[in-house]
Image (cartoon, rainbow, N blue to C red; front, side):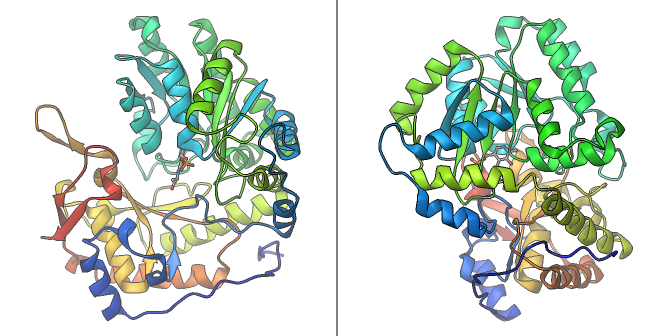
Amino acid sequence: MKTIIEPFKIKSVEPIKMNSIDDRKKIIINNNYNLFQVRSNDVIIDLLTDSGTGAMSSKQWAGIMNGDESYAGSNSYLYFKDVIQDIFGFKYILPTHQGRASERILFSTLCKEGDIVPNNTHFDTTKANILFQGSKPVDLIDEEYKNTQSIFPFKGNMSVKKLEKLLSTTDLTKIPLIMLTITNNSGGGQPVSMQNISQVSKVAKKYKIPLYIDACRFAENAYFIKQREDKYKNWTIKKIVQKIFSYADGCTMSAKKDAIVNIGGFLCTNNDEVAEKNKNLLILTEGFPTYGGLAGRDLEAIAIGLNEAMDIDYLNYRVKSIEYLGNKLLENNIPILQPTGGHAIYIDASLFLKHINKNRFPGQALACELYIAGGIRCSEIGSLMFGGIDENGKEYFSDNELVRLAMPRRTYTQSHIDYVIEVIIDVYKRRKNIRGLKIIEQSKYLRHFTAKLKKV
Ligand code: F0G
């Protein structure tokens, strides 16, 4: 059959509160054109993030009841550790409350003032945590991949050429680690190929620099490798995942993505010394190493979710339903980042709203318009998120102005998606009347969460 159905039945539902365009016009003004400030009750379809918003399975909920809440030596931790070791293969595993806690601990341990951390593309929290250590995050992606309209099977790949160049011309004591983000979220949810992972690892080994993977969407990345890299077409997802992580010295993970839980994360390493330092920091700020800021029940749900995320029927439905949304938008000439990625559709707002300049935040203007038109909440991944003001008071901007419609896992059905398509087409038809925004208040770090804006 051509139709791909949701490979699950719904056992528990959460009502959606409907509201009107007039309500939403008032809500967006009251919240200063910042969708992070809008309460969820006022949102009809919430595509702000795929992080922590997925639906847990009945097995995960059963796991919640099995949670062992002992302070030390919890059975749930031992189960969590065994599952992660089996899948990812690392020696040391620390639970953390979410991905950014793993990042903060890892960068506190490894980075010092003036260091440089290369990545294919840093996610915003990764970037902010590196900057917080006084170090510099550097994105190494090929120029041709930055064009949202170019089609390549692995647009998330790190540029090995740029990496070689950086390493061969920099004092290596200033590069404490190399990161690789799979899939590349800020670059459009694009996958990284096994070939690229192996090449990056080879370069890392040559210069004796540890390679850490930002593993948030590891299962989706593995699915793309199976689909697009011939050599792996007959491999199971788990075997592909094991191969990916065999190239790395450690990983950071937000379990809120491909472990399909509402909260949690972990930090892995093979290095004894790094593990010891990480553990001491974890105890100081997150919790004892057998729970790390989580409840025992969370550890159970993560362990179960990690295996569910590698299920081929689930991955097929997940990636194909995002492709379905993308194809419908393309059929209506709506400019999206191509090809469609693993967890989201990214509308190219600089093509959608050609009349709005970068300094008037076309991505944020579009995101707000989608909210007003249909109660859809999505996020800007452009100059509000990645731009700012440098030390000399000069404004800088992001390369791309994207609007991300991130799909929570196992949460919305095809009719929800059809509604989203209808709203976007409606907004596209009257795009010329949409005006830009300007910032009236902002913070130094992660300004998109709290900035106040108004219409120009
Ligand atoms: N790395 C990547 C690639 C991410 O996408 C995220 C989170 C993190 C690290 C941090 O994880 O939220 O658990 O602390 N991304 C979410 C998103 C927030 O909407 O894409 P966290």
